[in-house]
Image (cartoon, rainbow, N blue to C red; front, side, top):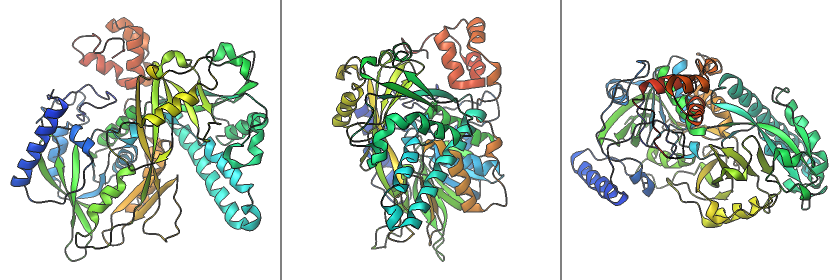
Length: 564
């Protein structure tokens, strides 16, 4: 089993031996860092995010053998990283895109290594809105752009942009279907309620007068949205004013005309990321967390990148890893990686490839939302989309959208929290209170542009793949959770070609095997678990829930009032 130490998502039940306070951990980190600088070869220094000092501590952890013997332990992965002469593909970053790229390349038969400087999904991949969504907002933007004045002033460009945007939405629908059907142990459908309190909205959403009539057009719009998935999703429908109190009792039905309901997929993003990483390891990838790239090794004659120098952040040991191809999958931290591939003597700084936009989420008690319905507010004061979702026995609300530089362990701005609180109260019978905010976080959307393209290259909410002309390093940035598999396929095709075809459409991710044959009732009877704990284990580990129960020496709750 890949060893995963403590993460904000409680992903796997393995804790490091350190119980230091934050200040002690910081002092220990700095002292070991100074010791390393005196004993190890000098390597390039990056302006590290201060949050990284608290995401790992040098603890020389003990490793245990894999319970299934299929996926080797972290220590064995490290030994393979040290002993392997050269990899076909080396991936830097173990989020959804990086782990997905490792899975794709390894399943094609390539020799693959993947390094993650923190825990898998400890950055942006665990800070999403938890939806595998097909892009209803992008569809709205596409239609608004098509019906704008550009249709007459630049018709070819306007129509090309529309086709490109709708192609992205269609692709999202196909990838959502793949996740629901092939990875059913990780995803499920959730109905999303869209409330309307008037028949005309002004100013109109998406800045187009047609959308001022969205309350009238919504049922038709959502049927088109259903059609893009070939009606493979549950059908959208109308919730009349009389039916609102029984379906969504928190809504003030007296203020509403009706609600339109459509479906998206919901998942536990950190668990999905871990399942992808575990599947990559099962396919033969040498994938390891808490290993950070510190420098790029280049051929002295050609300047081409041939490997990296990395550090095991658990032991402070330096590693030299060689590879024919290197792929950066750093999300909003991509530019930080790219700075390492630039020559230290270069007077010209690397052109930025990623513009980070952070989104804040808050968690409220469960009574703010039904357990079987979500809600979308499409008409917030600044025209952002705001989702309410039932999440792990609580209510998740988000997100905001503001351009900032990405950082590790970020604290959400208070103004973001206050904005969410204010907007969340609009349709409810009661106001959301600040003291009801149980937790909050923010993640970053990596809005990408190709730095090796022309100066007029547009910023994209879709993904960008680009290769450095001198070093040969490829990076992929942008995109969204929904398209992780498609992004991985495209970047592997771009890097190593298509002589070996992609196999990920046929792969069921870790935990999927046997998941249809296990039920919470079985765990309740066999291991005397509560219903909440049994459901949590099945929903979290799928077909591996029985393995977890067998490994446990006692079945007591680790955290009071939670099913862990």
